Length: 142
Image (cartoon, rainbow, N blue to C red; front, top):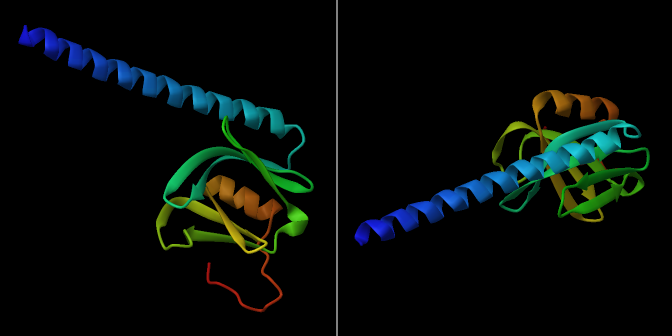
């Protein structure tokens, strides 16, 4: 009977892996659907990772005329562009971690929002949403 326990454990592990793979694939599909929906009216749309502390949350990032929208099946949020005080593009996060692409860093009302974009999409965003620094005269290297 020990073999039955082993087979059961292996079956549970395989099932868990398949469920995780399905959820991950479906989440990517939903993000792609959100991006497709936004492309008709947005200046730029990209798959990005919203960097929130140690978490990397996949989102559809869209630059609209008056706001930046970031969304996924669990998040539907935006920042109004009129309230964004600083826009930066960097090769690392504000905590000093390296990234594979570029970080789009937005500051609004004392909060920092960071999104990792791949290189070509970061370049496109930088073209349509150029860097902007606050009037304090302090500039960060980037």
